[in-house]
Image (cartoon, rainbow, N blue to C red; front, side, top):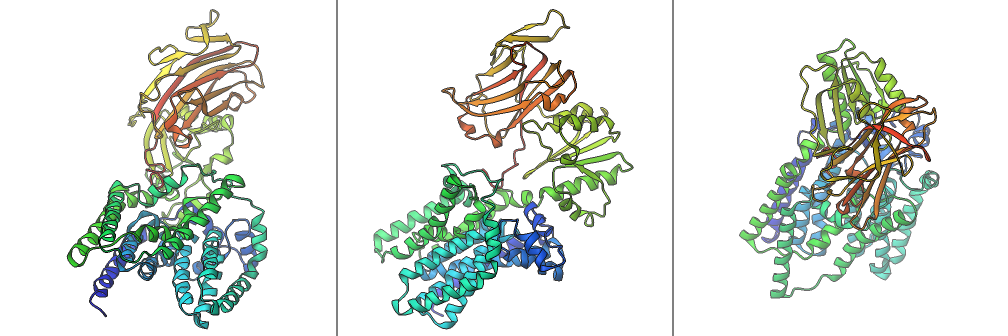
Length: 637
């Protein structure tokens, strides 16, 4: 082994060991994500035919990982660490694989920095701990690229056979890993020595033949036409993606920028050969699948998520690292060590990755329900959850609990929820991710019956409210950042003419100008530090004199030019049902879900009653309260 190669090999072993430690940290405590629980719920079929027809065809993913899980859990069981272990191992193997590609294409310095980033960035670490087709696809794509390099050098039967098999596995893994693999295959048609072209094309045909058994599943899944829960990407999607892959960390961005600046400086001094060919290949292997996914999502059906870009992610890293040149010996070791340290600190402390990811929503639901039932029991605790009951029941054995609960979906709409609460005699009410936006106001209505907050847990994609009856031992409620009623004047002006009702008690208003409308108009949103980690709550008591009431609450977000960026509404009938009399109507908006929130300058909250009549109301209130600060913190800054 030459003296120049030995220190890089030593560093690679150390970096791989660090990457393994980051992925296997407290292995037995890594919980299942919602996506994993969904996949595991589809492993209980009695036959392979049922697995494909009921567990794969309607899912939108190829059969590969689902079939693997089906047989894996039969042998090793359903414990979290056992299910995740093969995916963690594939994530670890990605580190030496990206080094091997980087070393061959650009050099040892470039390869070792790419391996460092692969080892410590949250993006590959997190997906290594999720038993879904993302890290497996990344591993297969890197393995395909390594074999592709060998085929381009010498197309032996062994190399071509391995290439065809891994290519087929990419197709069985995920459609975006297939798309990335197709880019690799297409590049080979232009790069390979002409004397190997026929053999190369035969290997491709062999791989296609290996995929034919899956063709009927592919045709069924083609009818799904996108992912209904995924929004179409905005023009800023890729800018946000770049920040995301670098942990939204200024420290990592500065470190990478300094390494790039150093590489450019060394280049101007020594002028080594420009590695344009492989830079272009690396860039295209990331950019083409990403562009296809983007335009398909915008113009046909949304499919693009950060998760599916992980298959091209290593080539973006290699493109960036291709401009890096490290100094020799002592300074080289310092730079690699400092970068690795920054990555570890960013992951564990700056991003609080382990604290957030290791408290997944479904397990936190189970932990709270089991804990309260054990402490109070005897029918004094009742839980309502916003999840699939089958997923939650996965944790019954782990927590040795025979808990009972209901789902929000099974209870029904707002009037049904109110009737359910009226019959409840439990002292403690646990609400797990209650729907609190638009017309679904389970939390606000529950507070009318359970006046005391016992605890609030806020985690990544998780909100758990424990409410109780009585006034003993109440925790402080959320303090509004600002709150206005119809009588306030500071920072708010009344949008429509309202007047006190002469025939009703004090505090009741009617609005007839324009007919049936009243509202508050905020002019201080920007000055009050309006941001996305906030929640806007509107409420009013409205008098309903018809069994089919008309009218609604509306909440509008506008920019400085008065253009409406988004509008929400909540129908009065969704709260009153078919009952007349006074009813409290609510509308909540989480600004996490509001587009272009940084452009918001004004908020208007309006109450519209029955057209051509006057609206009678009281207690019209608008408030802004802090929202869960870490709700999306692993995927947003």
